Length: 130
Image (tube, rainbow, N blue to C red; front, side, top):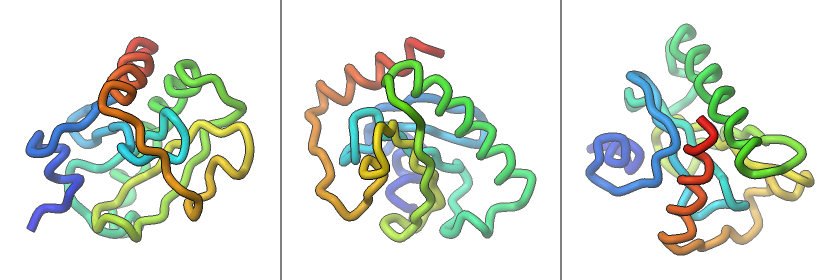
C-alpha cells in the first residue's frame, strides 16, 4: 500500500509543492514546527533513509541543500535545521526547518495548524525565491 508521501508525490493527495525533480519532491509540512517547515522525500518509496542507495542519498542531500538555501531567503532565520526522524510515515524524508533557536527543532512540542491559505502564501513566497 502506498505511503501518505507517495500519494502526495503522485498527486493523489494535495500538497503545497516547493520543488521537484525526477527523483525528489519537496513540500510544506501541513503540521509544521514553524512556518516554512519543508519535507523532502524521494519519489521512490523507501521506508528507512539509510536503505536508500548511496548515490541517490547523496543526490537527495544536494536537492535538500538547494531547497534549504531558497528556504532561508524566503523565511528569514539564523539557520535551516535538518532532521531525519522517520517514525511518523514509513517513507524516508528530511525535515528542513527555519530556526532561530534550538527549540525550533523540538519535535516533542505542539505543532502549528496553519490554514490552507496560510500554507499557500508561504509556499508561493518560497517558490518565488527559486
